[in-house]
Amino acid sequence: MIRGDKNLIIEIFQALETDWALCDEKDEDDHMVFVNEDRDQHETLKPSKALVKELEKEQYIQLDEKRSDPKERERDYMEFFEETIPVPFVYFYKVTKKGKELYAE
Image (tube, rainbow, N blue to C red):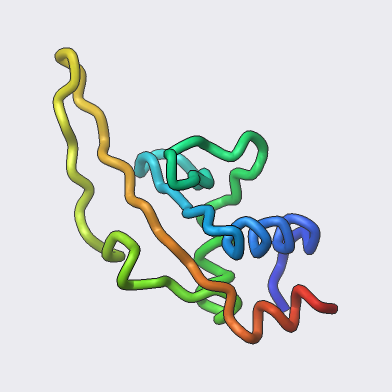
């Protein structure tokens, strides 16, 4: 069983099923943010990177490789008004059958 708040996990699954994407904005962050197709951020849902990684490892969620940035690649940076800004990674996940069973419990 996954460690963590079940209500938070259900919120994550609901967001993924309504086509929110997880965004890793920068390496230093210990959390990810949800973004929609307009790049608006979810106001409250910011799961830890460790929880997302565990959900994936335990096969509750699966990366949609056709729509997502590739995993394990180096981050790009861009110059913006004389400031170096990290380019976010955007990951689309699907809730697996195992995840839906957890959701239904």
